[in-house]
Length: 355
Image 1: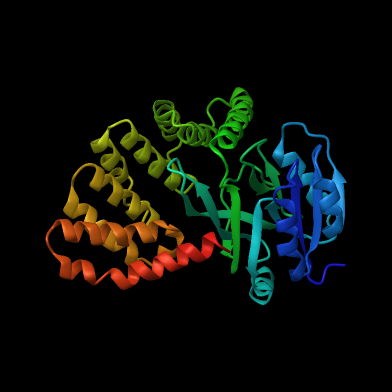
Image 2: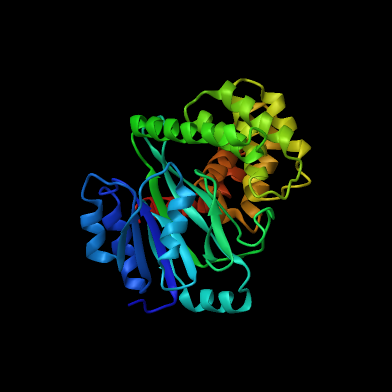
């Protein structure tokens, strides 16, 4: 029986590689745990039954939102935390979250998801994405077959809602995979996104996600086209994906050698997005465009912002680049001022990667 009135809902298919670690991390917190299996042929269900309160079957219909809603329907509690099998919870401050749900019962909870990501040179990085996964099932449901989103049950056309920040650390391992596995995952995503686009060819969010998959597949020209299409269809900068869209378009421009365009698109939206991540993206664009002084200023600014922890190991890269630029400028004394901060950020990166 759940010790606290929260149900963790997980959908799974052939996840024996990760699911035991996920459930082992969850068990000490006392949640009700429901695993919905969508057709596993490996040991996923066998492992889940050792830890979960319920293990359910759901016939896969190419729709992640439908599977998530089915899982939530079978929960004992109204408050749902949606996780994936490859996400491991390290901390969860139930006392603070209980207060937040009492004060803000109509809001949803978001948290920084720390992603371990395999990169082309064989190393691993970690990034941070703010994800909205904690909600009251009486007020919200999931929509979209892939890259699903929460919407109001009684007003699904409303695209914005208020969020509170959850004090929890969850680390995502699912991007730390082989190049072949990543290609397979992105091709699956593109197939489902293509179906979504057939239903609504003018959906900016779908075009954005197509760009994301094409970028991962290193199809940078296609990524640029998809991102530009998304941007042409959406003018509301308060949409939650818009900042990432502009940052991603800038990175895609860099990869097709449109360096000035990479800077210009970020400057065009600079008044709308004032985060450490956006500042870091602008710093990178300046550096690629050989505007070194501007890059240095932006790297320094990013490290001083309140949300700098959301940079992931880009904070480490910031300090590394600051030191490198100062050394290139013949100012080793200035570079030395950042070495302690560089070391601390490296230690945090190592902690997350080994957690």
